[in-house]
Length: 436
Image 1 (cartoon, rainbow, N blue to C red):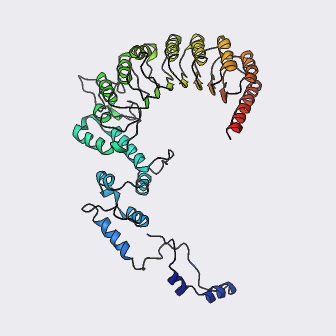
Image 2: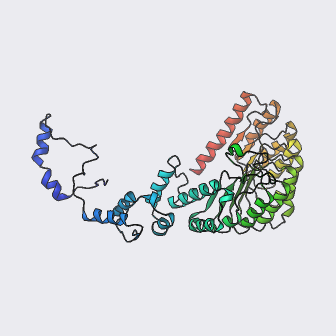
Image 3: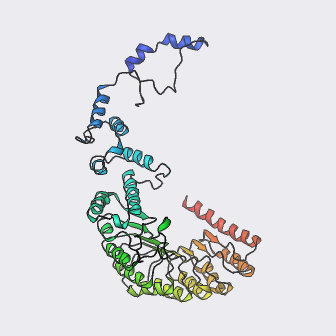
């Protein structure tokens, strides 16, 4: 249905009389009323020639797809409302229609619960989500390389970010329990505009086909994935919720080693431990990954030894944010990381739930007093104690930069925690006032 946005002057003069309006105002029982919620007002209204032409275009879209030649935006919107997307091929739509209203409508019909929170073109959001769902539901036995490659090439101009939250696994046979997933080499090497990838090899459902190690990654999987990585120029690399063996980290490290555009690396919940971290770092040289600013390694069983190795490597990087939560680095490892905060220009540090205690007092207080870059610090769920809590509060008097400090579950009383939160809130308000 087409909603009118204006009234023609001749229609207004023909149907709206000044005396009728005045009479209606004087007569409260006047029967002629405007039915503003009647959405069927134009059922018997003859369609204009423009509307008839647009309907013909929509009916013959498969044989003669016209869109760019329709100049008036209102007519384009009407065509977008009439087209039946269920019967049209994606290749036809991407070739002829780039405007946002149509892709917004398609996106909201297919995924009504997801909104455009990133403020990006709707065609990009649609193609990224469409490709992600296709790959997540694709079974390894159903992979036809030529068909997959054709779809990737169709989506490639619009895919900047690829998010994979699950993958189907190959069913095991009696003589073979090694998992193979879909080959990511042919996928990544054809995504020319890809700048960010977030992936897990975990599966969401497996039903009656369950077997031990069904969520493991095979050597063949990781080799194909790394081969595809070497063909990309990523800014963000996120690998999560899949167990990575040390040799797999070495393969991934070799694939990312020469990437000068990489800014963010996140490998969270991958359980590789110190051995995996050592394998990954053994590939890196002084010139490797020069522009990495954000590093996330939470919940990977990293100990104090791994934390010490990491601190030594990051001293030569311009790292800004570091997330090591849920790693048992103990007090020795925490001291190494806090010392790092005094060397590099860290703006955010998360060492929550890292099993350290009051032995970090000297390093922690030094960071609070001397560091003029750190804005966010999370040291929650550690055994700091009330005495150290009071010293933290006292040191905050010399810190005008820190805007977020989380000390929950650290053995600090509610009274001291309120004092600490008050000091941090005061810093935040001062900085907000300055920037305004």
